[in-house]
Length: 206
Length: 206
DNA sequence: TAGATTGTTAATCGATTAACAATC
DNA sequence: TAGATTGTTAATCGATTAACAATC
Image (tube, rainbow over the protein chains, first blue to last red):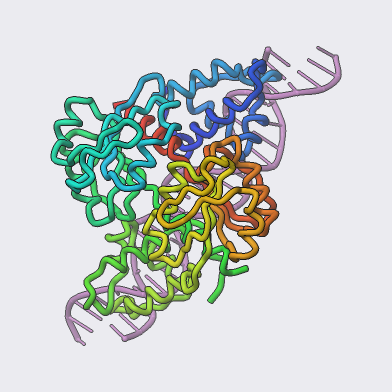
């Protein structure tokens, strides 16, 4: 079944996947209640999300764990591997390059690039920083699917332009800037200062 | 005015603040239209969010830029400084310790702690990694307001427990785990793998 | 006055969840 | 059969936005 899956549902799928991963290895079936508790959501939500995906459980029993995991992996496109380029060889870029969590899900960092000639050639976690002039060639030759922007804010838009014109259609933006991209390109933003500021909003009013 | 401000509004305030920062320095007033364009939201949204905060503009003219910035900073509690402890001295923890963006908004990283004795004593960006056994002392002595969890998933819950029992009431969690905290404690989660998986959902269906 | 822009209402939209018949 | 749990409806909740009178 391929109906329109709401964005909110999509963003919960990785959470369900992780919840299922934390189940005892010998557990064959699981109830929506249990997934809900592990994922921190409502059980009706779980059932509804799964029904969007066309996953069927068994009344009185629950869902088959292995089949459910496989369904979620397929829905998220995690049955193949994705080449990732990180733009920005600063601390954040290097941390992301080293981040072990990516490999678990089939994300392979194929390059870290930077505009600063002084950074080019440095090696972190087995990846040599290359010059950003090579970006277009790298994207084409290494079949890059995802670009991660880990540059200062002022460089973000230009980097996004170069990534998209090179053919990248998925961008994860860590720079504290709103970037414009052509339609059809998907951007997600992770802004560390914003997260902290939201915390302080609640904090400073006791 | 202090009515109930919706969570969605709160999470947009930092974005407005940044939008205003990117205005030309000599611009005295701004219209909701302009803020909206810079922030990537609807202009009615901007006006409504600001009215929640009790900010008044002038019909026909717009909002006073300086006054608006000051209002937003006060609303977010950014008029004072906050001590931050980073738990986890791995790549991510160090990247966060080095992240210059925090200082701009008054966040001061007062410690990086780790459970691994081999990491203790290492210095990154002027901060010496301390042992996690010192966490409670550090929180008390350095008046820590915010804890950042940058550990593996398996350690996240225990770290959260220690942070909260030491008195920390705001947590930013980078570990791929859902953590339980007492009511009154605020947790925000940033999950890098989840972000990438959401991108691939859209990517793999052309 | 004419033009611009706010502040707010009311409509819309979309997401969450309680509830329960269906059924294993 | 009795108990458990799904799948789905309908109600609720909350957030977004078009529209426009108020007014600078």
